[in-house]
Image (tube, rainbow, N blue to C red):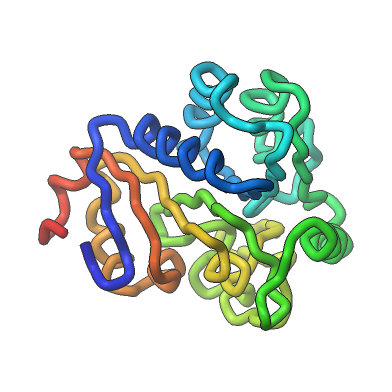
Length: 230
């Protein structure tokens, strides 16, 4: 435990997160969730569809994307495609909103309007999502907020089309104000090979470490690789 990060070392972090997520969603009248892309969430989507089909008020949930690659939704690299195939196609009646990252800046503006229309806002006008599910890349990025990119400095927009020179690409991403304003910020992380970067993030470094009041669901292998036990 740190002042800003609560760590849950689990035998099965995906199972533990899913169980907590179901409990949370059942306590909220009209819950909203934003899913990140990447490899780790895939098993979570499959688990939710298989084991929690009848335990979640899916028809009352609004699902958003945290980030998206600049590709069409049918592309194998599309974050939306994995949400679609592993969750949305398995359970009918879910209200889900796709980032049209293939449309560039226009896609960012369109998604910002969707957030404004579908979500309440705080006193600063920032859309409020009940739960954002995040990951951490090997370079310490989260969402598509990569080290050294312009999106890290954005405070007046909820969605940006972020250039990521180190990957020679662009991505749509929610910005820090939206992520920080969310009711819950949960990370899913596995593997001892990520321990060194995770330690840096816990110390407040790199993009993933700039968010506060977060919860981390990690496996015991990763926990054993930390320099200090929290």
